[in-house]
Length: 485
View 1 (cartoon, rainbow, N blue to C red):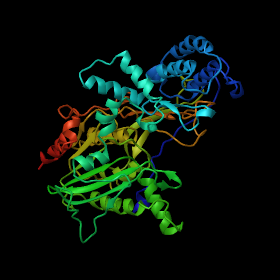
View 2: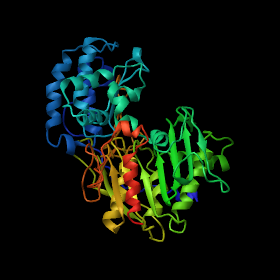
View 3: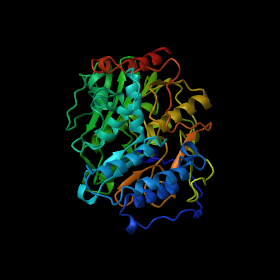
View 4: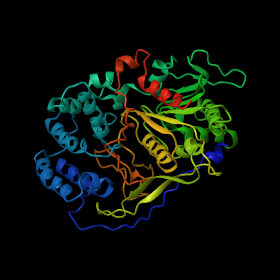
């Protein structure tokens, strides 16, 4: 069943390469000054960035080079010390450009030989989330707040993904409302940092300590666990059926394909599991698939899919998880990439399609999708897919909670496969950016904006209530399903 379910989304892209006229790209060996580094970065962005139609639709990007190159020339040679005044000035110049990009995946990473392992990084998604958090408290976002966010990037003692101002880290939904916290605060499941798991068996599917569920199972994979010699970065997964016969699914990121492939290889190809949790994920995912492939027959009256704090992952997970909900070959988005180094040159839009059920059916039960400001990438692609299910087929789907992150361009780890995408330079260890732009089937772009909850279903995040056993967003989703019964 797993191999049959592992259908990849097919994206057909025509690529033609040519190099436009313009200023020459500096040689990497000549990148010893801030001006040389900036010029090389500007050229690589010109070639590799895909959101020019959103950010710099005309000749504005040329003006950025014309304005900033003289400022960078004043800063001279690149110094290895992060406390060097010119280093701070130069990184501030990069920061002020990067923070305003629409690209919700974008990360700008910088380090020198002497500071290797202690990267400075900027991400516009986090910047927007911090700005929105400040404004949600009733304050105006000021230059001091902007400076605080920039300075936090230099806190090398903190984990890379937590180099943010302290109040943002402690109280924002972007940092605090995620799958592990939902299990702890909303469902009463205590999970330690090393990771625990509980898988229901055929004989005993009542977990006992999960209130309101007649059947439930969960897995938490700790930080640093290996999967195909790669740190999975933590993974939390919950499946349960409530006492009112509502299927509830929550998971922290889209990594199922890797766990399932690891398990299948263990069964037939390799001798040992790469990750000790693959068996648990495999078993619990099998339970989910068994329920959802015949939800009505299994007595399910509705489904809640909780994508709060879900940072995305593998596109191959989308058909694995969602095909049972969809008729065969359902378009849900459109995609394009660059067809030349010229920043204005794009391929034609092509459909992204959910494989769906071979028999063309869908369950016909209500579906509630929960999101917040850290629902990004595959989470937003999932939201688009269920929007399409509603818009094309009239399915009962509600988007509930908070606005999504605004980062839905797909990425690839294969350098050189496409003209656009992730790149690196001396000192700039990685610019993480999608190889393609995606929009909803009606042409609407949500990049840098996010997808809003439906009217009447937007629930502001209340950190105090959330951490004290009151999950208003989850209650709203369950109430939506109950309204049909």
